[in-house]
Length: 454
Image 1 (cartoon, rainbow, N blue to C red):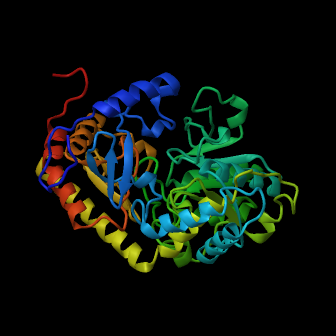
Image 2 (image 1 turned 30 degrees about the vertical axis):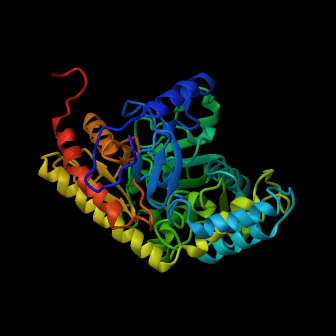
């Protein structure tokens, strides 16, 4: 079919080219995708292969247009193909794509990150996984300890030691969450319930002199958007300081997206505490592979070549990625963040209104301008505060809702356990497309039945 051109268009979409491409991809790539989050395993059907993007819209290989509520999982804060970012990248490419030496853009991007956050120094890498892996190694090297505390439902990249599932009891030494990760890799990882300060205190009472660090998403976005309860991050910072551990705040997802200073600007800057280490990604790369970790000067001094903790990367500080990230951050003004907050609030209200009208039990909530619709009974789960809460969703309802939105030209994350994202380019037309799609999608969710039932 042709691209959607009117606000009330919701025809059945042609996906033949995507289907053909997926068949080809399955022959050369496991699952047909290069990251599991892109697959439609959780919702069924064929992933859409995109050909281009502009502003708030994605265009697939069949010519279908979608309002994008994924935004490349966060980086596209300005919208796709922002002219100033494209122009800056084009200029940078003409000067060479990689030097293997220090370069000007990496220094300027580092200065921008330090200026926006409480870190004293920063080291650029190429992915969020690299950032968290390096931060954990640095924390262990600095403290001389081995134990790492993380929270169920918080994702910190596919680092072996952090791919751990929650065990029984308050503080359980976790088993690996995926085949291929040896038990020894997670033997020094403790998984606790998110937003459970008492569990953290008990763990420090039992293991405080062995804990190298506590790592948490500044606000969880990988079990849906789940904000820390008031004072939770502050308590983590305080407990780490009291016991000589480091507090690692993972802002790969929230950094520079929920505000100029990331989520720390919404809690730490107000409450008066500072993480020892922070990780960044996504927005700071402007759509290119770039990430970073940074922190206190004395901690960062342990990093090679200044200190004994080794970390390296051939493409770290790549001039093209650094240019894209620097341009994006400089364009992320107060007006941009105000627009993000406004659009997120509007879409959240529309989703709540449509699901309520259709009689679908749900909770819509936000962490900054990240937000999610949870298909849970609000009588039982009035606020989703943990992975256990998120796991009480009626996934069959989300699947029906997802596909109805997709048919109407709105691209949602293909999982009930992901945050939704908007950009500053989401204009009135994009919001109207979402509003037009929601009633039918809510009705589809209301009519959905679990697999195996009538």
